[in-house]
Length: 227
Length: 227
DNA sequence: AAGTGGTCTAGACCACTGT
DNA sequence: CAGTGGTCTAGACCACTTG
Image (cartoon, rainbow over all chains, first blue to last red; front, side, top):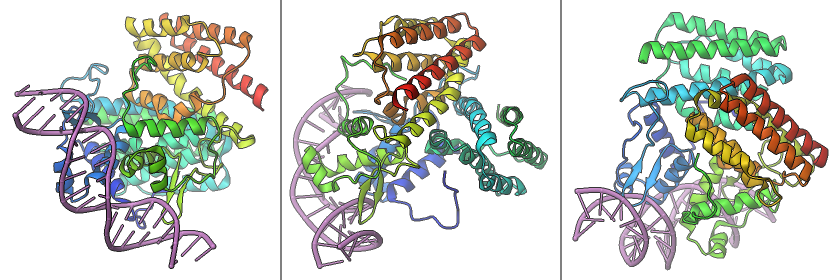
């Protein structure tokens, strides 16, 4: 996984910018499951891009499962299974988030376990650096994401790497789920540090326990705030 | 995840057919890491499709990480170390496959655990049906894939569903890893059945143990044959 | 019937790479 | 310099869904 360096980029292709724009609208909740997008032709003119580029973006989003095209009808955000977590209408957003956290608990149980076994000195440096950053409102998403991707890289498994770095996952990582509570920021730092220490000690079981605890806390915190 | 019914479909969009064609060429080893594809304009005329459709296909493959576009140079299959295929080469080939199996062990530990908790009668029917098929050389990939996707569906987690059903995973599922040994087919059926029974009993721990055992056996079998 | 996605045509110009 | 991807234009026709 590449480190996301916010300074350099900006050389994205047109279609990638479009995807990012939609991804962030989904992440922020401006676009919700079940919503219908504007017609392709109209969207193209509003965004000042050609239909061709817009369609490239749609294809990618389609393959990510974040939109559905229905011939003769339009493009939609797939409806979420809200029943699952005992949620009610209007909480589809939260339903998706809980599925995501659930999936992460399995996937990251894997990445930390492997990281504990395989992390090189360089890997540990990157994780340590991510842990050292003091969390603030501004850098919350960036530093949290970097911490989890640093562990992923240390797991040296290209498939897990692909999953954690996928555009779909970035929807959640860049979502509106950041905590506003400075006390929670401190706790997060401590939880991250515990994971780091366990990996450094090459104690896979401890690392696994630490990340599961961390993800559980993250989830509970969101439910408390949004649920 | 939708059930793949080979009888009905065929109504794929043009770009999906193109993606499938490339995916199967990668899975079969006709295309290898480092290979350069033909120029976009030439490929379009050879496949008798418009440049626009071909580009849609390339965008999707790009987002899957299975091709890279280099302006002014061409499109390439990523080199072996970072990439996710190489299914017909020697050693990297195997390393990649092991990454995949490793990732699956974590992900499917999740899907079976959740399936044991959440599977509906309908879900169990689908899994049972998949287990009931007698494995042969012809249906090996299809029936094995269907079994694992049926469990995934029963987990009722859209994120895990997306991962297991992704085109990237299909490269491995449709790869050259099928066993040729009829005795092994029988064992696979038994292992599948054990997983099914555990899910049916809603015994998550047993289901987890059963799938980890199964995946371990699959892996060992491949190493024995290909390693 | 109108709206919308799916696909195509037949070009064009730019930016970049490699020789 | 020629080749190649990135993007665009300005249309067109078909198949399908919805009212």
